[in-house]
Length: 130
Image 1 (spheres, one colour):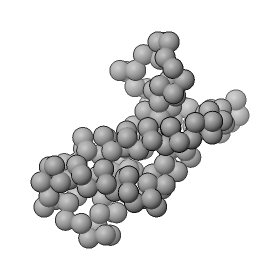
Image 2 (image 1 turned 45 degrees about the horizontal axis):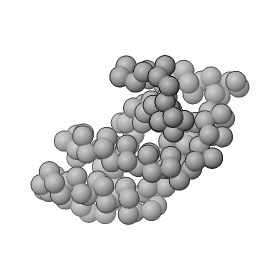
Image 3 (image 1 turned 90 degrees about the horizontal axis):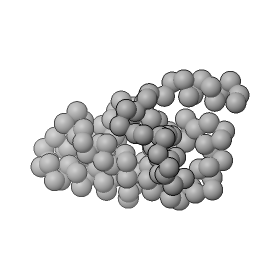
């Protein structure tokens, strides 16, 4: 393992709810051991980027109903390709060399998981988004 990989892994938070000893499928294991800790670590950054995005496109997020806010989050992360790619890129930047190799073999499936997890994460914290 190179120095960059060691530093990246040292920065990741441990997630108590995930039992990494379970015999899980490769994609689920990658999600639990890699994606979840990265998303948790980068959470404040994702919240800030989303808040800045809705501000820049002049969306009155705070004036929306809860259901409208949820739809806004989902639509932004699934339909705005540039924003979606930015968010995925932030996650990918935190991969080790080995994780990058795993990601490259299942890029489409992992991108879908990243976006689904980000949508859920932002929807769960929409009260923080200003």
